Image 1 (tube, rainbow, N blue to C red):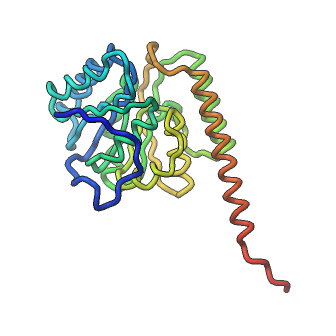
Image 2: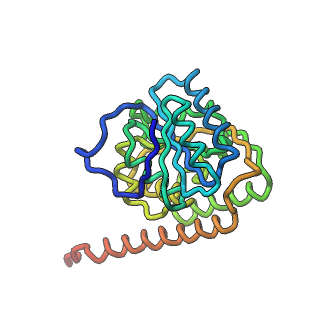
Image 3: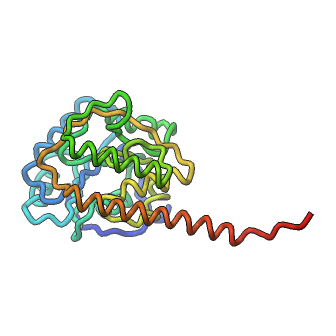
Length: 270
């Protein structure tokens, strides 16, 4: 397998798309994850090889790592089948997903965090409704009935508060915007991803809000999830950035509503 460098581009036109070779492509965005990467990829590869019934590929999307992560990713592409690595010169999980998904040759694109905090048993229930055409997007949720979660009180409070803000400010009907375990039908991704402005952690939320506003079907899968205490996510700055993203979407919705009202024809007098 080869490693290549990619950058964020608009979704390709239909005649530019590669022929479908896989049912599911799993993207793992990484930034300075040299200690976790190899073990996680080998574990995921073994799980898929043993028990996953669809054609699959793993794509490691390196986000400008400086600690040797890319070298490990490149080595894994030679040692494991159906593993590819791509390199982006700039940081940002949303940027990595945008670039990798736009070049995918799969029917369904998904991603998971490199720490594999979500139990892999949830992967098949995540992608099956998309492959069957039952749903458009699928998300793992830690906040629905049936989920089992092990995490600290601080992170629990931040997560629940954030999702409550989404329900109040954006009328979100999905329960967990931030779980790093999501899948999208490739045709839906080509529609939505070019509309998403965020390039970092708010990418997930914005994608889901845009999907809901367009009436797309969002399937939720309760997951077993264990917190990674060595996470690279800086919670407070990330939470503030997410709140700025929420504010942007609120004002965008209001602007769209005002524009619609201003373009309505005047009512005729009775």
